[in-house]
Amino acid sequence: MSDIKEIIIPDIGGFDNVDVIEILVNIGDVVEVEQSLLTLESDKAAMEIPAVDAGKITEILVAEGDQVSEGHAIMKIEVQADGKSTVEKPESVPVEQPKTSSPAKANKSAPVKAELRNSFAQTKLIPLRDQQNKTVAKVAQSQAGDSLAYASPSTRRFARKLGVDLNKVVGSGRKNRILKEDIELFVSQALNNPQSSGTGVSTIAAPAIDFSKFGETETKALSKIQKLSGQNLHRSWVTIPHVTQFDEADITDLEAFRKSHAEEAKSQGFKLTPLVFLMKASVAALQKFPTFNASLDNSGEELIMKKYFNIGIAVDTPNGLVVPVVKDVDKKSLYDLAKELGEISVKARDKKLMPSDMQGGCFTISSLGGVGGTAFTPIVNAPEVAILGVSRSSIKPVYKEGEFVPRLMLPLSLSYDHRVIDGALAARFTTYMGYVLSDLRRLLL
Ligand code: CAO
Image 1 (cartoon, helix red, strand yellow):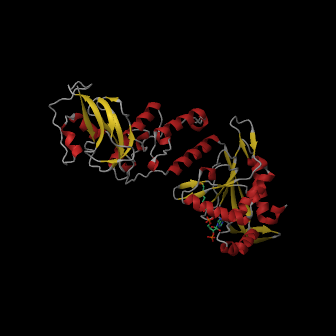
Image 2 (cartoon, rainbow, N blue to C red):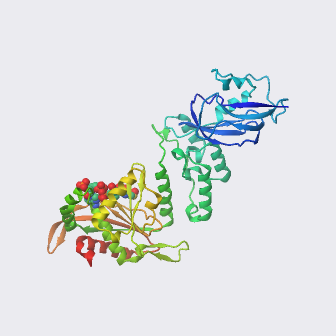
Image 3 (cartoon, protein in one colour):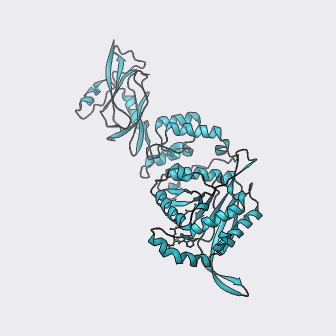
């Protein structure tokens, strides 16, 4: 003899209308007591709802994306009416009754293991990032590795089983939640591209520090873009032997030319900044020194020389750094480039860039000229082999024909992959850029 019972959402710590993010069983599955049936997620916590009876799932009454609260019926289960379930349910344990009179809750009179309910309330609740939530701090202190990563308990279990540190996985779910697929992708990337995970650099693990011991703290989640670009930057930093060549270009005449056309550009709806001149000068330098317009193949034994000239532009957005690529810079006019630059900056800041907008780059320019500074050491945007950092121009005394004259000087910082480019070649590259930028007519030569 068997009975069909409804499975009801128990006390979930006062949360209401919590999203169902994962259904962990199918109709027909035979489940054990305490087996997780589905995962819920509120703004503050992810939690799994365990079975309180052993039996066969006959109906699933909710779907992923639905919202549920305490007392909501989520599934139906066929249980042995004679009580012969796989785990004995002690009759003597008092059962907390629901306080509302919803029909679903009325079914809660079935015996439920208080022990299980307590263990659910205390341990199935996994707090997520929330700076105000002290539990996060406790979890962070007491567990290593993945404690602050944003994932459901079953995903955490999956990651633990595979030995994956969730902090290294980029989540593709809602609000950057890490899904099982993200872990699978991480593992497959690690297996297929050992360089991306095993960089050959071994360090001792950083100790977990409770900063709140020293003063007030707040925990803030990194954006998806920051996590993704952080992984790529880290890989480039540890796998590419970087050298940075510093130089200055005299852009006094360029600036006069730019200013004389700035109004016209403005009337056409875009801004003519020094950056487009730098894009053109970079292409001239890439054409003169083609080794810069190349990528190392995976074996590290051959250079793939590119015959096209696509320039990546680092764009600072509220969510982090992105690098859209302007294609065929050699074929476009300064105005075309200025217009396109304006459009991609807006797209980048509005998070509307498509993956194809960020692919196919040959060389990257990172301009902090609008912000400030005199020099910096940009990180090569692999698989490219060089990146040009640009800082703010300033008037400097330059000794010319027996006297000091005020000239507008633009600082250039060229970082390059020393496996591919020698120091002398890098110095020639920036010298040539200075030569072109100091007299734009040289672009025509
Ligand atoms: N020297 C002096 N002034 C400069 C300059 C330079 N090298 N470069 C730009 N400027 C001026 C511009 O002419 C503009 O002046 P006006 O406001 O008077 O017209 C002002 O600075 C602001 O320029 P901008 O930043 O809006 O435009 P841009 O074309 O120079 O740059 C973009 C566009 C998208 C690259 C830029 O906005 C940006 O995001 N830069 C940050 C990139 C970054 O974060 N790099 C670091 C990567 S490593 O972490």
